Image (cartoon, rainbow, N blue to C red; front, top):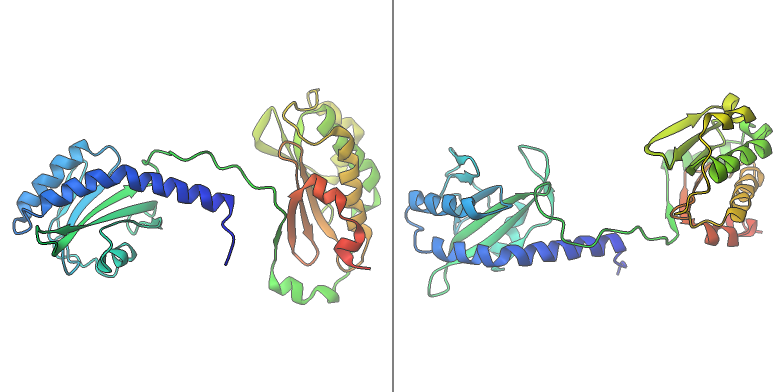
Length: 316
């Protein structure tokens, strides 16, 4: 059994809240539809009246008990003609209803026409004797639904991601080639440390194999800046960044930054076959990212990263 992640819990909670929010209105409309199943115009008028009150719904429609549409699709702007006779029986959101589940909110899917993430709610329409007469369907665009769950906060558990199998299969046929960054790695690491501590950089990714760095700054977090090897080896580059105190939201202790960078250096040079291609540090969330020559990637909290020695990564 797989363990549910925090992200999956957030999604599940959001879906349950939305399902509960829509349940009452879907039940009321389905009950009203049961009295009009032989009159598609009356059904469409009922759906249009409900659409005027529905705050988030995009489409409403009714199917017979065989899953064939018996109304045109009602939208906010009118009735979408040509939908009667449409067979929805094979659509994924119908499967639970066909098994007798009275009310079901589908998993999110990409809509066929607009290619946008959507949800469909399906309610069984029954007569007074409990017999299935058909199905009421309501489509929702995820962009238009309210976000009612707590904001997702990323977990800091160690995450390992396998890379390209083609690269892994040829791993032992390759060997590290010294890059321009390798030859001046100590000075470059010191420069990037300075940019973090005094020039507002909160996320730095060092691409050791391609000799560049990608930086994000607190005063312009929506854009990143790329420094090439010539810029990384020129201490004057610091003057191009506005002086800023170490970011108050940073959780990485300043004295730990050089230790993280020295660990990057050790991973870069420890083995000529399996070696660090790129390493990143985000001082706000405390996460370290690693990409190795085998194309495998690791993400972990910086404190956990500093606890790992070379024997952990490469064995004895």
